[in-house]
Image 1 (cartoon, one colour):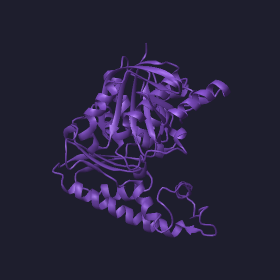
Image 2 (spheres, rainbow, N blue to C red; image 1 turned 30 degrees about the vertical axis):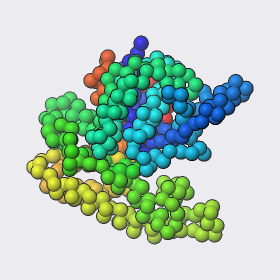
Image 3 (cartoon, rainbow, N blue to C red; image 1 turned 180 degrees about the vertical axis):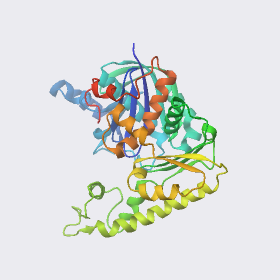
Image 4 (cartoon, rainbow, N blue to C red; image 1 turned 180 degrees about the horizontal axis):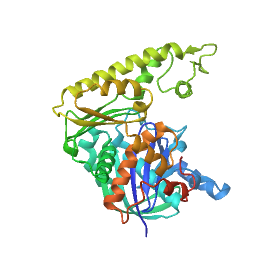
Length: 382
């Protein structure tokens, strides 16, 4: 039986997972939505499968201990649990099992010998890591898309968000004959959170000044949406992704709002909040020399110029935007967009670390040809 390793990043922009079958790495991405699925709906979906060939097997439906859940796009239109407001650890088990279920579905194997890893915000890592590891280690079976999946969890690890970047960088340093016990600062700006971690001599942080605050892209949306719409409005989000000059909304006919006027002010206000927070964190350091690892989609897009100028002005700091890691993510995971490469970097670093530490063989993680020539599981996100 093949042994798998999977590492899951419970991002608010999406559940991201990287996994290995002992030969190659793959990746999976889905919306972070989770919704309760009452027994009556489970019955209807089962009946649909019998009558029409659809039903449970055609969607992302999870059954754990007699409770049903719709995940990803199948949670759309249902009463969703508010993943943006809840602690990530609250729904971590369900989202991780969903990613494992998708792995089983893609490989058409329903008895998994598997190492499981996941990332939590630092504050949640300190308080909830033991409980989450116990939850995952004790899960022997669940249903996904109507199929029973049996698990043999071997190694189960929970790391703070950003640790995957450090694990990757330490492995790179060892391969290149560099000192891998240097000190690292991880600065990640994602969809919801801003994470600041201190790895003194490469060792994981245990408390302050490391921490996580809600200063991610949602804070920028709060500013730009003020007086116009709710921050999570999909029309606003779509307009920003398209770099549109203006935005309009179906519930506000005849009105059009200029983004050219709003964006510079919102960006300046948002950056000032980020800069102030980082300044407090860096001021508390007593490390004469360290390497800053910059991660997160928001850091690599909206805030890149701001962060580059700020970080390069810090005494003793070597700034690493992890371009080599992003190139590896591109070649090994077949992720094309630079911003997506940054978003997948943390879970890829965690998965590579687990594959080397706990795997039966070491995947060809640095071979660009290994991803282009392999057979990918159908439906794997690109």
